[in-house]
Length: 357
Image 1 (cartoon, rainbow, N blue to C red):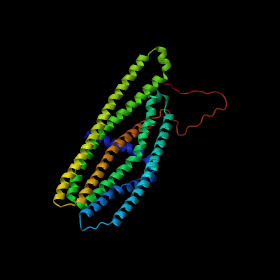
Image 2 (cartoon, rainbow, N blue to C red):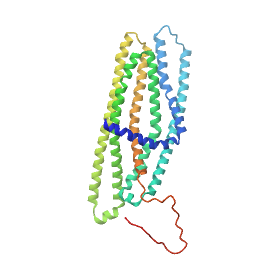
Image 3 (cartoon, one colour):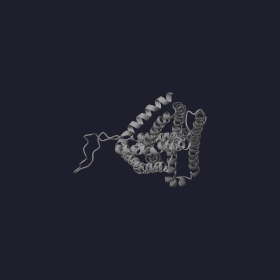
Image 4 (cartoon, rainbow, N blue to C red):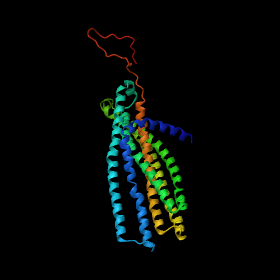
């Protein structure tokens, strides 16, 4: 509990620092979220259509005509065209927005790196710096684009599905949605552990890159002193540590994926058991049960998406943190606000009160 309480303020601080980069393209984000809401229509409407067709086929009081079927088909085609146009915008302009944010952050990082002293570069491996302004910022791109829209889509689907299903059977809907908090809490816990492993993996990748860079750039010196064996030992040690972290990472991923699959089985088990009982007791119709199965499928897919993008969220926050570590590195030598350019018309240069370290 204590680690959670200390981690949440840290993440809030990181996201607060990132917000200005996102707000620069707020109108693209707003329209992207609008398109995201349009892509949910088909998933929400289709179960209602299938429910209507099923009830029409099993209930003699409902007259199903060819014209009615064609009308439903045309409506669905129109919705699919809207879905395609909205998805195209999200996949193109939405991604480009993420690239623009990445470009802005890389520019600021490089500008800050130019102002840092030689002491910083003496104490920091170049491979680590390169990883932070390339790979880490790529994860920020995916985070900036996907996470807001996917969480927004998930919120719409969960809210609308709950409202529609409550109109059919409040009790059955509450039973089904009662399983959701279990998965949310479990996924949050497992993703938090996965995030810590991801961060350690990023650090180790930077160290491994730095070791490679030092070895490859120093080949002339290595060969001159015949220390190839020592270099191989050093690289093998870092390589083995990288393997250990990757193994832990994949075990954490496997645990998360397995828990999600078990949750899928739990949800369908609840639908089969309680939906079948309600159907036998004639508290729901055959069309209602079909709609429930389809909505549960949508619900499971939505929760899977949330789980996947919780992982993306962790990677994005990690990338922002590593970016901020560069930006927060103090500049040792800085001009005063009223500093004047040196102008020497003749003579030499005189040093006064100058120290060296």
